[in-house]
Image (cartoon, rainbow over all chains, first blue to last red; front, side, top):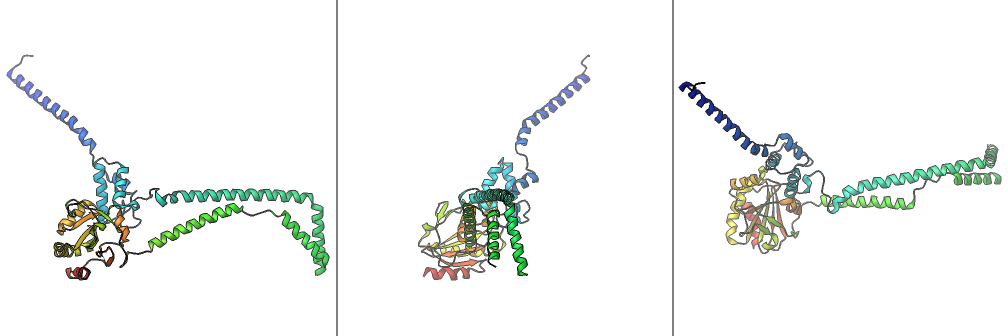
Amino acid sequence: MKLTPGNKKLRITFLAMLALALGIFLAGQVYRPALAQNPTPTDDEVNRIAHQLYCPVCENTPLDVCPTEACRQWRDLIRQQLSKGWTEDQIKQYFIDQYGVRVVGEPPATGLNWLVYVLPPLIILAGAFILFRALRAWTKSSKAATAAGSGTEAPRDDYVARLEEELKKRK
Amino acid sequence: MQGAAISRENVMNEIKETAPRRGVPVWAQIVVWTLLVALLVLVAVGLNRAQQGQVQKGDRINDLTLTLFSGYEYNGANQVKLSDLNGKVVVVNFWASWCKPCEQEAADLEKSWELYKGGGRVVFIGVDYVDTEPEARAYLKKFGITFSNGPDLGTKISQMFRIKGVPETYFIDQKGVLQYVQIGPFTSVADIQAIIDPMLK
């Protein structure tokens, strides 16, 4: 194909547009990783963590459903920490450090708190063991009673007969 | 009759011998009762602690350490201990940025601080209760607070005073003994002075 001035212009234009498109594409490749590293946390992500925390002021109200202004600020704080890349454990530890252990649903097993985790299973196990022993003892005793009863049926009948006889006399 | 008595006694003895034994082992009873008593003791201690109420006038206040917000240091230090303030009247004010009644007294507290800070005999300390730092700083800036302030980390200090809410203000004398408790906001600078001045005599 012969390069006429018109054709030459067209080719230059086409090449310029191609270069521009390539440049935009490459720029997107460079910047995309940065955008992917700091996405804005969704409400679900924030509430998933907030649900595990309790409002430090309102009693027994999880942070995700607490309607107060203070709770909104704490949820915003979680959002900021998530966008900085904090993990769930880091965020929970931050809240514990700031507001005390009562902000988490499960108290840490330190000091006397460990009794909350140890005592209930211990009591259940002890109760199950006692019940097992009692049932075994009852089963053994009733078997022994049956065995004793079959061996002495004649005297038992004799005693019952004599008792009935005495009772009749009293009437 | 004697025959009837003997027969009844024999029948009763036989019933006793052949009846199934229903007793729980003694050691098991001891274990269960011990656990129950331990549980009751724990509950009693917890209830007693919950019903203690706030610290009262005349109570000696245990030493406390407050980490201060930057820009609100005490004599250049970013921490202040109550024991370092012996010999001075200490006013400990619990507040929060989300607390509307706290706003009513903020300006009066700052004015009072301005009146006493030159004498060096009174120290005002603000304890920010379960708050977020940006909002706390905005609150302090809004009311022009200049006395030392810091967050109640882990709510240790508020638990020590056993506060019921905010705002609450505690006046501690030069020997570390609590002399006055203000529940709710102050309504004037004069009210604050009426508490502090007698303590300075």
